[in-house]
Image 1 (cartoon, rainbow, N blue to C red):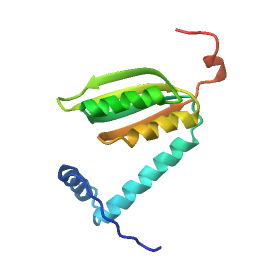
Image 2 (image 1 turned 180 degrees about the vertical axis):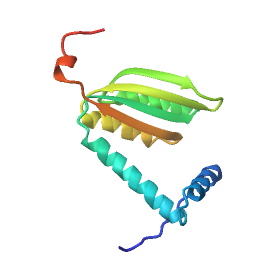
Image 3 (image 1 turned 180 degrees about the horizontal axis):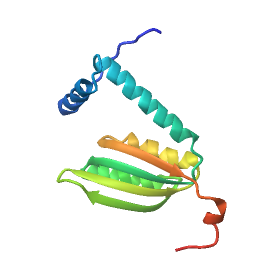
Length: 142
């Protein structure tokens, strides 16, 4: 296995928290912890790609900034996935949590999730996809 070096620029407070975890989990260094985190990230993305859900919950944490909020709204309006609902919660003076319920095919749901996760200022994104049995999807509405 050939190792490659690369540089990463991150906020100091994030690095401090990361170093605390490296020490607590007794990693031999940052490199091994980053490799472990990357494996977990890759595994999560691959798992999400295998889901054939038609519904999803997209959970987002970001700093409360008007421009970012406008970009989030624009992304939702331009999405091919149907935005069923959006819940916006002020979790601190500076941060918001947004939970978006989506309906659509896997590619349109992932497209919106990818668009949002790439927006500058987004700090955390988690996509949970699922499919209801066909009998659950037909007939009854709330």
